[in-house]
Length: 591
Ligand code: SAT
Ligand code: MN
Image (cartoon, rainbow, N blue to C red; front, side, top):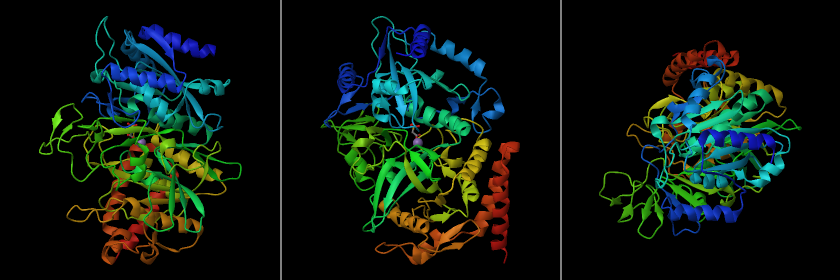
């Protein structure tokens, strides 16, 4: 074992005072023993699905807590206006008091993990120290863990992460089913020294440090320094009926359907979608001047409610076995259920709080942010190249959000600078993935609002610069599956029908179809959006594919006021694009 690793572990053990320290090897037998242990201690419920467990979290610990997530750069301005900043020295002092003795009576697990396929030049290693077995078994699916990671590390650096649920156990005290410490929850990132400290929460992105903490917040800062991109994007392979394949990345905020899109079953005959990743992409220019992406993760942490054989049959197949479920409902025959899984709910369930549930109950049986965790390798649509060490070449980047109005179904950016502006301009109606008001429209640039490890204005600038370094520049598109009519109903069917939009994007990449210039970007000609077999009126299609200059004049005003928060850090390229958009919109609005 490398001396700096044992030193790190010893230091944290001295601070947190665990009863023992265990290095995770990643062996299947070891993980199976932990799963058994969780069941024996009544922390997890065994399911009828093979090797699968159900966990119920504390009702106070059900989603990422953005208000308790901090970026601790030396200077406040380097965290920027969209992050919660804390002085690194003060924060470290605070963390030392929080973590003092926080693992008493517990085991400290050392999890070496790789973000990216082990041995890939694009992969990076982290070491998470945690006192949560739930974290251990989830990290084992979400990342590549154990001895093989240490063997491949060589002399490279690693990102240290310290996680504690903040519930020390007194002698003889029983383990609570979901240990956490919501009052003192604190998730702190040190982008300059590349460290992560997370206290008090056991849930998802708060606790599985490889995901948002490392692969986005810390990695975005590394990527800025090294000239690449760490993005909140799925990666998918799209094959046309002639057998030609292209890869797309798509950025959407949490719980806006990235997993569904990455596993989409096209309704268009002859088209195929394969999954490389469903949440995070690391992108870099290859030696041939093309942009290559790897999925740094190895698993899927998907939103359960709404997932069904209709909305995402591939996900339903993926979670048939060896899956972990959190905050879903339990059926009488030891299986899982959540809202939207079937049209009719079962007659009786145990809900996510552990209480009897019948369909006449007003409360939901599963929590809206209930999740499944599963290894991506189990996904039937997994791409044959998903673990390619050099990544897959990207032809197009899609930006989307949940917008019930204003934003058309799809349009194309004029160029990379305009595409960067589109990414910077994303707003989305909030979901249950983060604590907050569901449905409220908020700016979420690049779907990175909660995940950018440095000043978002500088991040826009980094995007603009990165675009100058490649030879084969991907096309950039905006998409919006979530348009609604006056009665609040979705006017686009979504899911598998989104393949129609993917087809247009594919054909634009091929140079096979024209587009029409509009004030906001390049729109499809209505007849180029394949609507064969789709029950949709011409009028609705027109509505989906045209822009309303009045609405856009408002949008521009709103964006101008929003971008003010970045002050001097707002790059010229964004200002230029905004001015140009304003000019085009007012030209179009003129009678
Ligand atoms: O809890 S996570 O941050 O991992 C999920 C999400 O918000 O995308
Ligand atoms: Mn996400």
